[in-house]
Length: 390
Image (cartoon, rainbow, N blue to C red; front, side, top):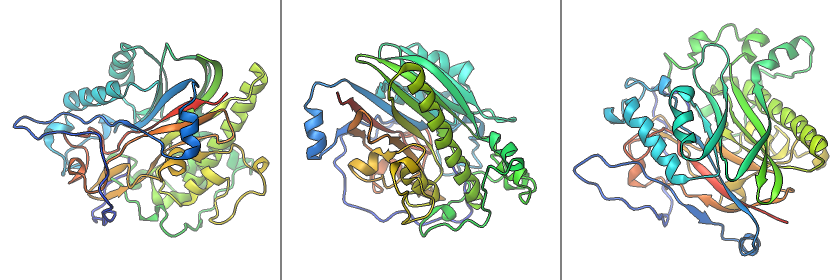
């Protein structure tokens, strides 16, 4: 979730209409939320995989917009009924249940104990959760279907752990980091008064203060029940502020470092080589430093590591490797762009065979910005179906 700007940034140019499988009719009563479908990947390589008898599992990542951040003053473009907790919570549940994914990675997940845990687990899921540090009420959760996967081991990622590394000179934070063209410098915040207000950021010249952003992630190893195979799933929410691009990059580096250590732990303990799926709201657009680092191990555009051994974990984006990154995953009048990604280990035993459809910029259900009656969050869910390659 980004914060809103007083300036309206231009939307992405319209592209050719997509063949969406979702249809709806406007009625006199308020319409309900839309449920996107999984679209088969259209490449010869993937088609050969999709025709095999391998085991498949579905995976969705969704920033559901924490209710703690929902104020009419921050979303003046949204219909007032769409912002009320009772309506939003039920709409989000409707979307999640209709998706029916084997794994649900949710960001900005608040009301976990009081609402989401019991309501989602009542339809066959178990879950793990990491709440943000400090006084923040939201966090990241992974819900998984009990008949698909079994939790083996989990670890929380607290990016505030970067703060002690300053004293040990183990963290490199470049406050003058240059962003490539089209990077996230253009991103603006959605909430100047309530969510991570710039006025409350403290003395940013102190690297300890600068790095303490109360952001978290969670990662876990799961044993798929058919076949009996281990995979690692990580879910995170990177800091939002474009003025702290160095902090976002430090968090991305820490994420992959922790992920590499966790993968080694799982590999040694269970004598296996687990595949990795990483999801989250990275608050970074395609091509900027964070994105570049996640998919190449380098924060400099055009600079790639000399070999895969130079990278903590080798990852590629599901959408970029199938149909191309979406036009947007976050849609408000102040900003419309792609911030959310699902990444996977390309050298592992899993391959994406379908992806979750997203609306085109001209789609009527996203006009005017989100949330609205069709989409209960300012973000859109993204997803993929993976197949185990034996």
